[in-house]
Image (cartoon, rainbow, N blue to C red; front, side, top):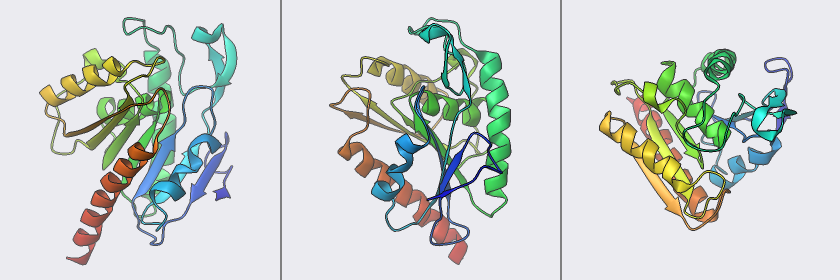
Length: 227
């Protein structure tokens, strides 16, 4: 994988696809993690290189739920339960920054698939569903839907959404995914939801399901390109 500091100063890992206009998967890591944590997913899910992959680092910032200690985070976290106040300003500011990165990738002729693990998945859902940024799909892995009370009805441009969650997740209980799934389906979003016998992590079956999901998107794009 190549590393670029010019586009994203915090650090950016990229893996090219076999075609210049391959769909681009931008995958955001979880709270306190780093771009290296998810980089191995590219080779496991897409060994053929049908997609281009981008893994950015989140900025380092104080995080309230961890006593204000600085760590990599896409936005601040105030509390651990579903009724805690949320960092709406932080979400909005980071969405603007990430939109610049996404625009850079779209400029290469690619459609965008935005996703992430835990906080990274939540950040992805926020960008795709709250800001109106057009993405082909969203991958929310062991995540939750931020600012869910503000979610609007799906449109013709709304992305496909892949939800995956562990049934034994003690960090973000599976009810977080179930609440998000129910709300989004009522509002007309197309959801592919998956549950696994795991905790707050990734598993082999999940990656296999993700591979199938991404290949379906890549196949549809290749079909359009041939028409």
